[in-house]
Length: 49
View 1 (cartoon, rainbow, N blue to C red):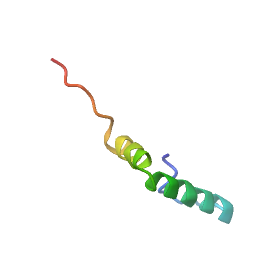
View 2: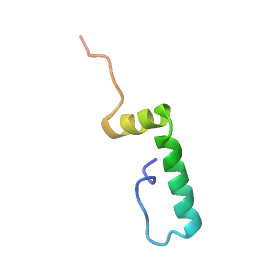
View 3: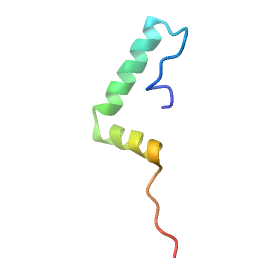
View 4: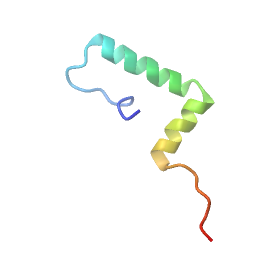
């Protein structure tokens, strides 16, 4: 997940295409977008008390 929005030095064309495809899959579904959002800001939690 942390590799998706980043390009790393030394990536070949195959690695770049795989990363782009995985990213498109996540962005192409509501569940994928929710996963990205939860990883960025944290999962919802029940208040204590």
